[in-house]
Amino acid sequence: MPLLRVSALHKYYGDNHVLKGVDLSIEEGEVVAIIGRSGSGKSTLLRTLNGLESISDGVIEVDGEYLDAARADLRSLRQKVGMVFQQFNLFPHLSVGENVMLAPQVVKKTSKGEARQLAEQMLARVGLGEKFNAYPDQLSGGQQQRVAIARALAMSPKVLLCDEITSALDPELVTEVLGVVRQLAKEGMTLIMVTHEMRFAREVGDKLVFMHQGKVHEVGNPREVFAAPQTAELANFIGAVAQAS
Amino acid sequence: MDFTLWDIVRNLLAGLQWTLLLSLVAFVCGGVAGLLLLLARISDNPYLRGLARGYIELFQGTPLLMQLFMVFFGIALFGIDVSAWMAAAIALTLFTSAFLAEIWRGCVESIGRGQWEASGSLALSRLEQLRYVILPQAMRIAIAPTVGFSVQVVKGTAVTSIIGFTELTKTGGMLANATFEPFLTYGLVAVGYFILCYPLSLSARYLERRLHAPA
Image 1 (spheres, rainbow over the protein chains, first blue to last red):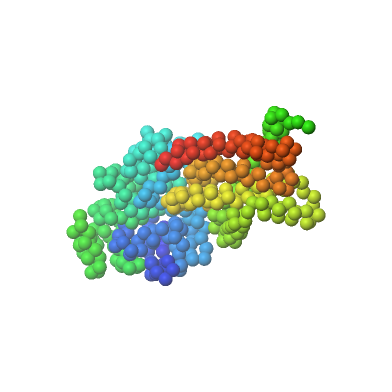
Image 2 (spheres, each protein chain N blue to C red):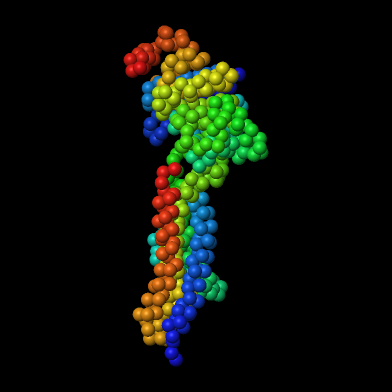
C-alpha cells in the first residue's frame, strides 16, 4: 500500500482551475521530484498535501490520514507531513535551537530537556550542531535552510515536502542544502520536491512527475524519462531547461 | 475667601491623581478587552470577525463623549445606579479596547504569511501559532504605537468631567469658578496633562526608533 495517494484531485482559485484531476501514488522511501513550468500547478499540488491549500474535489491519503474537500484533520496530517519552504521561514524571534524545539514541545508535549536533545541531534544531522544558540539573521541562506530542514525533521514526519528549497539561495549555497537532502534520501526519508534542479532530480530521484496544465502529464524513473520523454511537452520542457542552464 | 497659588495646585494635584487612575484603569482593562477583541477580529470564524469589526467601527466612528453618555444614562435606564467613576471607567475601557484592537490587528497583519505557513505546517493550532510565533513578533512592532495611543487615553479622560467625575479638568473648572482666575487655573490644568503625556510621547518616539529598526 502506498504511503501517499492522491486521487482525482481538483483545485479551483475562483474560476481558475489549477489542478484538474491529479492522481499520484508514492511509496515509502521514495524520492519524488515534481517538475513543470511555472503555473503548471506543481507548487499548488505540493501545498495541498499538508493542507496549506484546501482542495475542491478528490482525496488525499497519507499513512492513514484522510483528507477531502469536506473534512481534514490538519493537526494529525501535518504531524506526518513536514514542509520546507523556498523562503526558509524560520522564526526570527527564536534562536536556531528554539526554532527546532518549538513544535515538539507545543504539539507533541515533549519535555524541554528532551526537546533540547532532539534539537541538538537534528541540528547535528544537518551539520549545524554548533549553531544552537545563534539567531536566524546571523546565518547564511544555506544555513537557514538547513535549520528549516532540521525543524521539520524534529517532528519525525513520514513525508517531507520541499518547495523549491534552493531557489532563493545564492548558487554557492545550493550544494550544502542539496547535500543534506541527498543524505536524507539515503537514509530512506520519503521526499517530495518541487525543484528546478534537474541534475539533482535525475541523480537522487526515484520518480519524476512532470506537471503540465494542472495535470500529471508524465511519470517515470527520472533517468529513463530524461533520456526518452514520452510526450512532446516534456521533451520541450527538458529542452528549454537544458538551453537555459 | 482667598486662594493662594498653592491651594490651586494642591487641589489640581488631587484631581490629577484621579485622571491618572482613570487612565491606568482604562488602559489596563482596555488592553485586556482589546486583546480578546483582537483574537475575535482575526479569528477564522466569520461571525466572530464581523462582530468584532462592528464593535470597532462603532467605537471608532462615534465621539467618546457620546459613548460616555450612552454608558452613563444607558445603564441607569435599567434601574442600575452607576456612579460617574464607574461610567467613566467603563466608557473609556470600551473606547480604548476598540482602538488598541485595531492598532494590534495592523501589527499582526504585518507579520508575513510565511510565518503562518511555517508554523502551520509544523502542526501548531491557530492559537498556538499566535501564542508562540505571531504575537511575539507583532508585539515588538506594537509597543511604540500602543504607548503613543496611551496619550489619547489620558487626554480622553477629560471628557468625563462632563458627567461630574472630579478628575483634573472638573477640578480645574470648580477652582476657576471659585478663584475667578480661569486663565491661570486652566493653564495649570494644561500643564498637568502635559506632565502626564509628554513622557509617554517621548518614550513612544524612543521605542519607535529602537524597535522599528528591521529585525
